[in-house]
Every structure is written in C-alpha cells, then in structure tokens.
Image 1 (tube, rainbow, N blue to C red):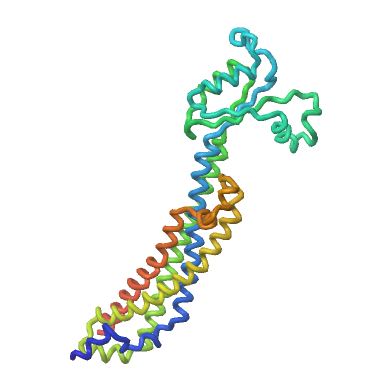
Image 2 (cartoon, rainbow, N blue to C red):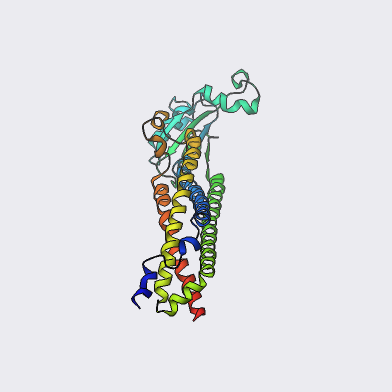
Length: 310
C-alpha cells in the first residue's frame, strides 16, 4: 500500500511522456506573448489618456484681433489691446502660464491654409497666446468674459470637444485590450484543459490501476497539476522573453513623441525606462498568472475526470 502513494511524488504515471514538453509550452508562450501585447496596449492607452488630461486639456488658445489697436477708453489708459489681454492673463488665478506666440510662429501656423507667407498679405495677423491652466477642469468662462470686455472680439478656444472624442477612443481601446486579455485567458485555459485530458486519455490504464490501489484524487490531480504548472511556467517565460523586445522596440519608436528631453532617452538604461513601471509589474505577473491557470485548470480537469471514473 505504501508503494501506491508514490504517484504523488514520482512520475509513476509517465506524465513526462503523456504531457509533451514541446506543444503545451509553445501554446502557452503564444498566449503570453499576445497577453503581453494587449497589456502593453492597455497601458499605452491609459498613459495617453493621462497625458491628454494633463497636457492638452489644461491648454487653451487666446486669439486677439487687431492687437496693436487701442483698447476701450474706460480701460485702455493708452495701452493696446494686446497689453490689456497680457495683463489680464498674467493676473488670472486660473492661468499658470501664458506665452505670446511670435509672429513667425503664427505665420507658420497659418501658412498651410493661406498658401503663402501670411506676412506678405495686407491682412493684419491676430496675436495668439498659448495659455496653460492651473488645472484641466478650470472654469474659464469668467476669464473669457473679462478678455472680451478688455478687447472685444477676443476668442478663447479650449480643446474640450475633441478631447471628449479622444477620451472615448481611449476607453474603447482599453475595452478592446481588456477583452483581448480575457480571450487569451480563456484560450489558455482551454489549451491546458485539452492537454490535460489528452494526458489522462494516454495514461488511463495506469491511472485506473493506481487509483484502485488507493491513490486519492488529490494525489493524482496534484501530480498532473505540478507537471502542467511547470510546462505552463516555462512557456510563459518563453513568451515573455519574446514579447519584451517587441514592446521595447515599439516604445523606442514612439519615444520621439513622448514629452521628455531627447538626452534623457540616451542615458544608460533609458531603453528599459521607456516602459512604465506599472507595465513592468503587469509583465512580471504574467508567468505567475499562467502557472496559476495551469494549476487550477489541471486540478479541476483531473478531479472531474476521476469523479466520472468512479
């Protein structure tokens, strides 16, 4: 009877032959590779949304027509409309910084629409301010009304409309990435279950013998689960090893568009730093998740099979 307990500790069931160390790890590696890409896409979408909220959402443009003209008599006191708007922007509590765009930069912005150098036209160019707000949700209605009184015709433009569309796009990308992760997890579970059932079918006679000699369901299921967990973990490490260079390459391609100094990306270890820490944590958790899926799926599959065998 003591020898009947050995399946829990040795490979008396011949699982190294029944559960191949080639097919299952390769399938798990493919699943982990896809999961890593989906996780990277979800993280990138979240980072892009944060960048928009703290960047474009906190920025507005102020357009002042006829900037060199005198302001209203009751407020001008010899100052131009540009001077009045500049003072008001710097004094507004909701404004963190206001930058007057040079005429050359304004001309460069208008050139695609005018088709030539706007400076050669007889039309007076407006003055443009790039204004950064203290908070993305700052209320600028009072500031807009004040600027309109100081310099009638002044336009205040925020990015709210298209930012809402971009936020909806980001949410859809995150939902797609989450759905992809769920599908990958389901497929991985199905792959492990099919491989386990194939191993059960291949070693059915041996399992029936040791089960009849007194080996419990937990002992047999534990041996299957350990073998499947090792194979799943090996496949996960392989898939992660293949996915990390791909993610680093994609991040390196997108690095010029990131809001950081170019010399910062050339520092030692900067290539690894282009991936955010939360993504590294998610990638590091993938092998553990794959091993857990392998363990639980194998346990459930073997126990269910043994229950029907009894």
